[in-house]
Length: 206
Image (cartoon, rainbow, N blue to C red; front, side, top):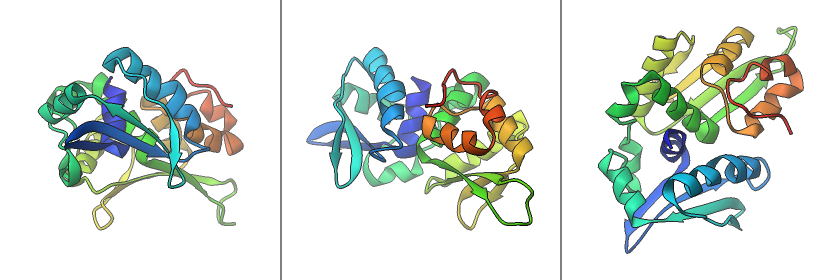
């Protein structure tokens, strides 16, 4: 459930006017597996809903229609509408390293990106993970968590982003936080398949 909270902080849009629902939007190709095999089972098991996937405006989407779920998210401090940009991870998550790990994973699975610097200066493609968000407070929380668990990173305040770089840091992220989104793992596997095997989540390449 905490990974779903992280995904909601990263990509969920909460609506509480007239109809209450939470909507997620992703890439129709790269996010289909993650939606189907990670988020939807959590929603079915913990929220008791079975959303259907649909494509609209070139985005793969699903909606969780549940006033109870929307009210619960608001109660733990994740507001609806434009105020979502002010949301932070609630205290019961930040005070528990195991829960914060799952929350940060959900944020990175939905809103994070990984890319490789291919410049000749590097003998091998140089990996970088970037998380760029509007949520200033959440970015600060994640930065503090990275410091706590020993993940080297840069907090770029001008972009409100967290950036990690290098093979050793990527290995550290995979071992300590990991990805559940197969899209990120497939990108890593193109150049560093041995690192994917160190991912702390039970997810396989496809």
